[in-house]
Image (cartoon, rainbow, N blue to C red; front, side):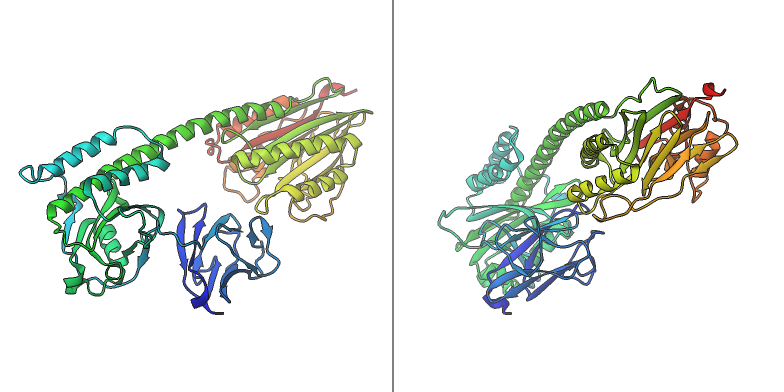
Amino acid sequence: MDSLKTNPAEVTVYSPLSAPVRHSLDRLVTSIGRSSECAIPIKDRYLSRHHAEILSSDGRWLLKDCGSANGTYLNGVRLEQDLPLHGGDRIRLGDTEIVFETDHNTDRMLSVRENVRSATIAIPVVDINHIDEGGDPTRLRILNLLATELIEDRPLDELFGFILDRVMEHLRPSRAALGLLAADGRSFVSVEVKREDPHDSSELAISHTLLTEVVEEKKALSFMDVGDSDKLSQARSIVMQGIHSVLCAPLMIGQSVVGVLYVDFLFNQRSISPEDVRLVALIARFAAIKLETTRLREESIQKRLLDEELRTAAVIQRRLLPDAPTGIAGFTLAGINRPCRSVSGDYFDFALRPHGKLYFVIADVSGKGVTAALLMAGLQAAFRIFTKSDPTPAELVSVLNVTLKENLPKSKFVTLFVGRLEIATGTVEYANAGHVPPLLIRKDEIVELGETDLLLGIVTRAEYRNHVIQLSQGDALVMFTDGVSDALDLDGQVDASLSIAAILKGMHGSTASEIAELVEKSVVEGPESAMADDVTLVVVSRNRATLG
């Protein structure tokens, strides 16, 4: 392998736990994984310690999976062998996405490492609040014009270019750039560059030392007369670009530096004064305020749209969850769902079949929110289709598992309990796929139905067992999700069902609604009433009135 013959490339890592981070590929083997020893360490529990590698080989970049448990995906297809990478390719590792880029982009700032001892002019941001009114009136005019021009609202994706156009118009630099910093403060997640010369295709590189001083010391800086300055003789990124004057100022939100405004003047001897540095720093302050207010405005709009969509989704989901059947001779039934967010990943349902059989199900999709709710809707459709063939509960769970395994993301799974009631006799057949064990209320005891099998969506071929219980008169079967058991774990007990059993004591002979309402009230009024998880209950109760 020879990295010298391979075109320059970089990757941008998008992780749900951190801001996007860009990495240059500057070695023969770039390791990626959960381990801190990897060249690109990523905090993602679904990654192996040494998950994948990007290799430089014979002038190409290759992607290699290192035997990871959850696999490496290139453009949505699981990697079975080393494959070449092309610009724009998307690599999926667990919940993390990595975008590979090779095209030479002259509109991106790149940090380089070199030593610079000090700046020609350095002004702390706390000292830039004013420009000497007795100085050049042009500077005050520029600030007034810029402030006026920035009053108008513009989309965030247009604002970068607009600000830089104004900088180019008012300051007449050779080049200007706005860059938003990644979380590490050493690289950029968003950059835009403007050039005075439309034929200029040179790459803009900001020195690492300059960037560090701007960010860490919160200073606006100027470097001048690079060719004659011993202080800057080692600043390779500046010298090689022929720059004679550089100004760089922080974009600040509160006390945090979120980016930089950079301008330079190539091949001229323009003298940079402290007032020039203050001017650029004030422009950077205007730009930061405008970028932040625009971001907040657009986030607010997006949040309102999302809230409206979630309200609509919540209405649809409430309609999907059924009312408990009534008129079932000798039985009452109840179903309750209280999402901890707008929509829920919990599910319950009933299906009344000919010949006096009633299916009932309760399930919990891992995670919360919209993704879990969408998976719940798919589970409901499958349940209602497959119960039409009158399978045993074990057969039903098996076919649901196969269906879910084909559609569930690798990081998702489902716990499920399904039963089939013989209405005439009170016999209940059931199967449990990793769900919280239900409780059976008998006359003199409360019994936990602890038998369970593998949860759904893990493996395609799984065996599920059929179990049988008898509901006598006054008995009730109480099913719930872990949102109930967690909320009612009053003493931090390992077996939270003991707390629920204590609540249900004395409820033999009660209707399903009475039992469900008691448990729900206990959750609402319990120590975890803020509900960290969705709360769902299903109760099947045999009437005491049938006692003969």
